[in-house]
Image (cartoon, rainbow, N blue to C red; front, side):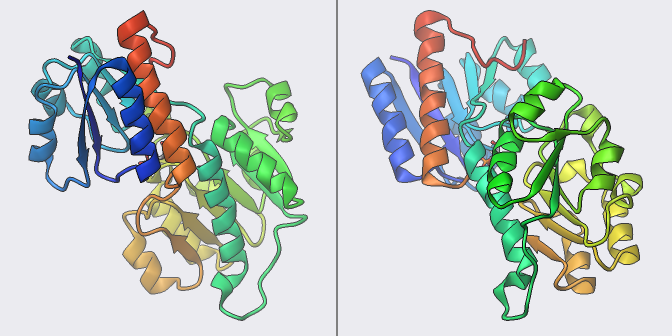
Length: 307
Ligand code: 3PG
């Protein structure tokens, strides 16, 4: 009987776990749950006899792959797979997949929710500002960027997009005006939403040269990864532009300094919350389970990311 490990340091909502259990029960697989674990050694021992594994932001390092010597497939229930050692997985013939689009609405709703919360001064009783009529720039326009554009349009925002990998028509179909460069996007838009994956060329891509182009009352919104933003540039921007705010679902390493020096100009969730809804957990968790069954039963490798 195939053994499938669901290893989630940040657990799925209960209905998602029930749905995953159902998929594996019907397939005749055994499900092992490792939720809320605190120590790496717990993951290393749980993965030892697993044929497949579902994870979220859990780190799959060479050491984890070594411990899971029977692993054939790892599915990241979510979009970003920068937490998985892709090269080591490929070397060991372990297929890695993600579940694109399954949690994008949850992330997009959080982005807009944080924007409203900050624009309204954290609902502290003082007059804030509205989103209607403001310009939003979507930096990378995949599933999450498109959902953000859809919701922002509903707020009456003017939405612009930049994505070097997508045709202009794709952005326009998703309700975004296409800009030709990241410089143009940052220069146009008071709000910028970062939605790019972390890969070699995107690490610290958002630097002072880009940030300083943002017009007055600039707000940077990050529901992607903290690594996209150069933190020296972030601190310089806070120091030189008193109008600048930073809202992020992943606190930067310099968050203590920002909190001490720039109160009222930031918001950081205490733990990554973008995909933390029942619906996103159900969508991504069950998709991951079905992808594992499809892989073992039909050899289906759709959504493999280590090609
Ligand atoms: C993703 O890449 O799918 C999101 O960042 C969600 O991550 P999480 O599953 O750890 O909440």
